[in-house]
Image (cartoon, rainbow, N blue to C red; front, side):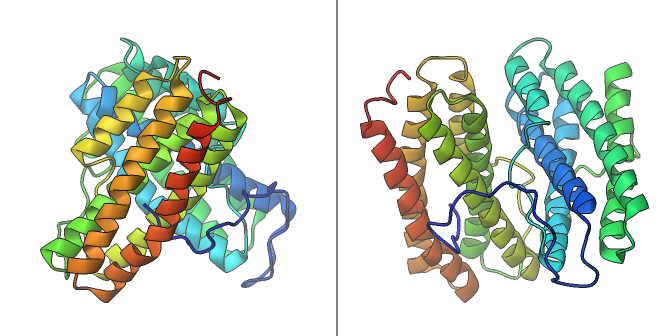
Length: 337
């Protein structure tokens, strides 16, 4: 599910461009590249932290991953603000330099080494994020960018310390990152609140499984399809976050609904099979068919105009995603590719 602004926009272009003169001083190419690397690292932490809820053996690791996802929500909003204010194109997915770490965690899923692999990867990723943010803070004179860099340093240091503690002795800190969102004080009725929460779970799920497809699909057309869905569902998450913030709706920290959890586990279980591409595409046919039905129901019975418009404008995008999956399945070169 996602409210598409430009239904047929091309894939994100190579990210070497300069920042536009959107607000304040323009950023140098080096500063832009550092921001893009930091966004990629944030996407890596988000992606890998979806997995413990689906496969970690230790409760404290699942709790830690949940705090990482909560952090990712606020971090994503900060990156979006800087992107809009400074005119910087930031990647919606994991960059090439971070993909080996993503594959390492993905390969360990459902193994006895998963918890340790996830935690050690998070420590490495956060160490890299701290170094990049320190370099950015030292280079920029822009107050908005410096504030972002300093917040990354502070939060990543705290999270890294917690991950290191879990690796060493498995005892979670009582002073570590918060484990829950703020209390739910939604200004919407139950129907609209539930729709937003479910829609966020759907976007999280479809972005997550499409990140897997971008890394593991055997057919290049399926990888391209996955990359398109990553970009679309990243925008969808941000639009839901904006409405949720306005109406004080508490969004789930990760994949919430039972059907979304089942879809994610199905994709994960097929990662190393020759039929992965078909499993991913069939799951998208089923998922987007359900998304369209959910959106139509919200349009019919919802009350808040902003939420109803979100649902209404999302139907064409879901339809394009559905048709895309169906078209690829009809292409015989995908089968068993």
